[in-house]
Length: 117
Image (cartoon, rainbow, N blue to C red; front, side):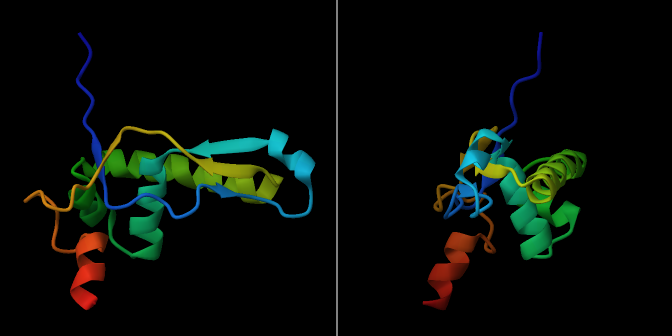
C-alpha cells in the first residue's frame, strides 16, 4: 500500500507561469516544467532567504523533502537558463493557503501584504 500524498502548502500562485528566451519562437519546442511546489521552494529559500528548516515549516513538510524539491528546482532553472529552454510553472502536489486556516503562518505572504496596507 502506498503512502498518502502529503500536500505542500503554498502561500500564493506565481504571477507568471512562463519564462524563457525572447529572441527565438522556435525555442518553445524546448521546455522545462517546474512544479508549483518547486517554485515555492525557490521563492522561500532564494528570495525570502529562509532556511530549509523554516521553508519546511511554512510548507508543512519535512526539511529533507524541501531539500529534495529545492535541488530538483535548481536543476530545472539551470537547464532553462544554460540551454535556452522555456520554463513553465505548472502542477505539483500542493494546496493553496486558504488564508483563514489557523495553520496559516503569521508570515504568510497574503497576511504580510494585508498587514502593511
